[in-house]
Image 1 (cartoon, rainbow, N blue to C red):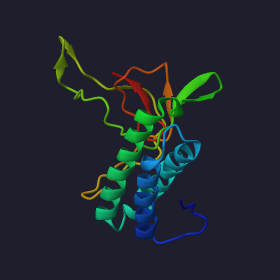
Image 2: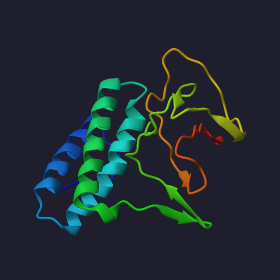
Image 3: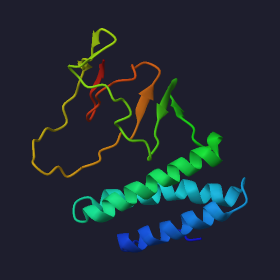
Length: 163
């Protein structure tokens, strides 16, 4: 099973990730080596996505699908391996597999008699752009504070708010 030690073509990294995932799946679980491979694959596939999104959307999509597969297998096989970071008295969710679209509520729609709204209570605008073909087609949160925000929150840059 491989380890990335030097920059390689993203297609080569992706192909090796596919091989490594199959080897990790074939292991007798629990297996500490397979667990480490799965953890490493999360980062490698995320980097493939980050590096390919501007020039190879097909590779980006394939890496995204494989990353979701790695995450699902990791959660099923090693449920205690997915932990939350704890800093300065607050828990953060920092999973590279997590999609930002977990909440299926749509602002302006009514659910159980209540309208879904996004209320921004504190913001620092870092940048804004409207483009036909966004560079970051699958933007994800790098770190999301848990415990003080409702389940349906819009976060862009350093924006925090409430539903």
